[in-house]
Length: 135
Ligand SMILES: [Cu+2]
Image 1 (cartoon, helix red, strand yellow):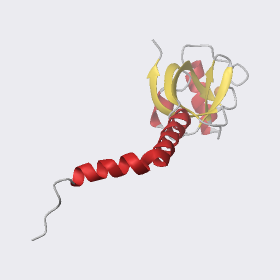
Image 2 (tube, rainbow, N blue to C red):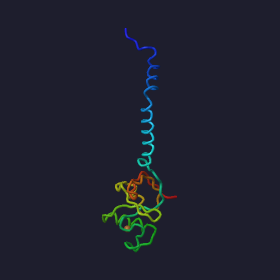
Image 3 (tube, rainbow, N blue to C red):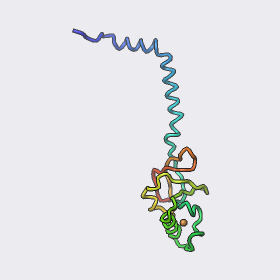
Image 4 (cartoon, rainbow, N blue to C red):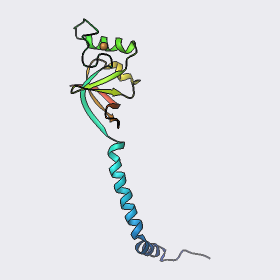
């Protein structure tokens, strides 16, 4: 009958102790590498700004003479229908939106929003995770 030696655990601990030096170093480097890469993978951020279209961006006055409450929304939707893309304007900067098909874009077209998402490595495209009406 074969049984595991009672000191199996102790043996493997010793094995780790004696041969683990380089492995331990490699492991530490691996972990710190992962931590350095983490912000690139999950750079989720929140911005305040406006959902608009790539034709008008900050200003719809070129495209519409309406000035009512829904003028920006109507113009944005009309521009999207005409083949433009949704964009997000925050602090005067125009960001492209990676997920153009997100249904919330239509809901918040022309509106001020709080946007949560990932800024892509090109520094100007956002993959939206969540859109909320600005408070
Ligand atoms: Cu427009």
